[in-house]
Amino acid sequence: MGKVAHFALHRTQICLASVTYRPIWSKRGSSSSILPCYIGAFLSSVDFFRALSTLTMLHIFPDASSIAAYVSRKLIDKIRRNREVVLGLATGGTMEPIYARFVEQARESKLDVSGLTSFNLDEYVGLSADHPKSYAAYMDEHLFRHLEFDRSRLHVPDGLATDLTEHCLAYSAKLEQCGGVELQLLGVGGNGHIGFNEPGTPFDSRCHVVQLSERTRIDNSRFFEGNAIVPEHAITMGLHEIMQAREIVLVATGETKAEILAQWYEREVTEDVPFTLLKRHPRAKILVDEAAAGLLPEHARRSAGALAVQVHGPADCASSLSI
Ligand code: F6R
Image (cartoon, rainbow, N blue to C red; front, top):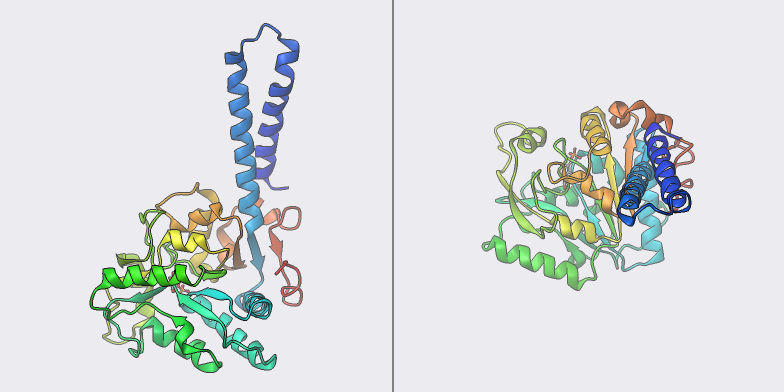
């Protein structure tokens, strides 16, 4: 068991012991003198369960392709169970191997994707769907054009909408009308953004227009070679909508994600790091490769096995998590 869990368990035991025994050995003890013990026990168990749930949602895989195999298998399983499933989709470098693997496996298994509905997280303001750097074009290139989807069920925010506020409201309403997202895929930005919800975004935000941070624009400039400039604004699904998904799978791969993953692990839930909000989701999984896990404290890595920080080999990754 990791140090964090040990520590929290120890504190919980001490305080629970005080709560249990104090009334017996000190009949004269007033309820006010016992109260701090109850509060201490409560807070310690909160600590304990928080530490435990942070550890249980984290899964370390050897590399990005093992994660791709796992996530692809999970998507296929969801679609097989419900051909009209609603998926929340992300873009970015992290998702590329996942979609490539999914397309390959879906073709091999002749998966019927025609009933599937999808909602993409975000889109750059000012880019048309056929602009090569738009997220609509990304989705087409990496996923949509490879399988027999019903295009009318695939939703990506419109970066050229004339009334952006109206468009955001309509996007939220459509999502709700479709019954919300069953499985939400997420990547994470180097500054902890999810979707394009930058640090400081209120937790109750819904689909909205965001001014991208300098950090995000610099990170994403790798996709805009030449003189092309990363747009300053984007439309993004809000944190409220992301947290409404019945299940969330966030993927972080490569050493550029190591720093933000360490922050996610160490910090309380805070608007400064939107990624930390996932600690409050009852069915969120954080899937990381060895490189992204590189700055996790040793005790978290050592907890692999004893707690549910699981290290998966390529062969067992499709079967070892319940999907
Ligand atoms: C993209 C999205 C973003 C990315 C994040 C990581 O739809 O919502 O939150 O997931 O910026 O991007 P990559 O995977 O390129 O590092």
